Structure formats: structure tokens, C-alpha cells
Length: 263
Image 1 (cartoon, rainbow, N blue to C red):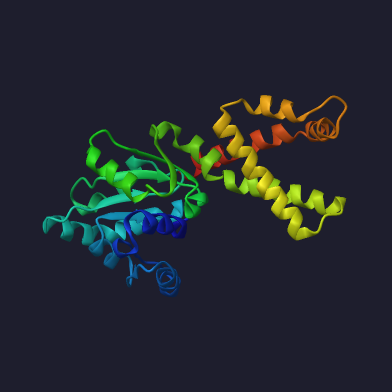
Image 2 (image 1 turned 90 degrees about the vertical axis):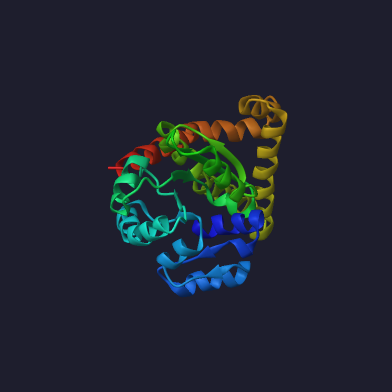
């Protein structure tokens, strides 16, 4: 996810404005070389070089990462350099982030962000939230960095776990469906390469049609299903297999896991 955000940021503000670090330095160096931005040796160097610090780490690692940054954050603050922390960790609420950063000795502006991997190709969905006292200028700055990522929306923090379960995890669900759709085509006799392209373009076209037409998905589905035809036979097979219920269960399972991660 960090790599996808870096790609979006480079498109929006230019690679010369982006620095990155990773616990595996060669990983950051390889991506920086590809994007034309700069890799620095370690998180503290990244904080020193940047104003907006995107923390792209797993939820269970966030406390240790933020605590380790507190000394450099404090030094920068005392030197008059404001840093903004932007977390993408699922389930880790803003109050927890503030607690992790307590030893910095001041109230660090913080933004909680949840993107999906589609930001890497400029077709993502991104939600952000912050405490009321965070200045509008800070939120606008994050939105500027993500201007080429896709749809960027502000939501309440109480909605973040639900957003993550749907949009953050959603590409994995869609890819499972895409793979299965292509497998069906192969089973019916299509070559693998063509089946995958036809499936992907079918999903892409259908999503574009839903967004541009404004029609309910059920209406669009009905427009494809002629009486006693092949499409309604396929829809019936999906219904017998509990397709819609399985997708709903997947979103709710991810939502519950997000809440567990926050604890």
C-alpha cells in the first residue's frame, strides 16, 4: 500500500517532492529508482526531510514505529518545523496514535487515512479523517498529495472501519471474482489470456456503466437478463450458491477484524 501511495503522490506533486524509507532499504531504493523520487536511510531521515509523514505499517507495528519517531519529531518541532503524521493502519484510532506519540511532548497534527491499492493506477478510493482541531490547511495538503489517486473523501472516524472493510479490502474480493469469472471462461473453452482480458474488461465496463448511469445495480442486472435466457440461468446459479450472502459476509468479517485490530 505504501508503494501505491508513493506512485499516486509522485503523479500529483512530482517525484522530487517524495522521499521514502523502508526497514528493507533495498526495497525503498528500488521503488525510488523506478519512480524517480528519493530513498533515505531510515524513518528518522524521512521525517527530517518531509512535512507530511505517511506511516504505511501494519497496525500491530504502529506503536513501536511512532514511539521511535518521537525524539526526531520533538527536535523538528523545537526547530519550528511542523510535521503531520498520516496513518493508514486499519483499526488504529486517532486517540491511540496520539498516545503513541505522547513522548514527543506536543500535539502533533494527525490524519487517519485508508486507501485501497487502486490508488497506484489513479483509480482508488481514499477516506480520511482527523480531529476537529486539525487545521483545514493540513487536510487540504493531504488531499493535494492524493489528487491523482482517485476519489478522496472525508468521513467520520466512526465510519472508518466500515469503509476499510468495503473499499480497503474490496480489491481482493473483486480479484477473486475476476479470477473465477476467467476460470469459467477457460472451462467453457476460451484461452486463458483472452478469458482474463474479457473478464477484466467486463468488470471495468460494468463498473463504469454503474457510475455513469446512476442506475441501481439491480436494474442494470435486469437489463441483461432476458426471459429464459443464459444470463438469468447464470444469475440463478449464483443465487443458489449464496453469492450475495458470501460477499456481504466477507465485508462484515473484515469489519469485525478491523475492530479487533484496533484493540
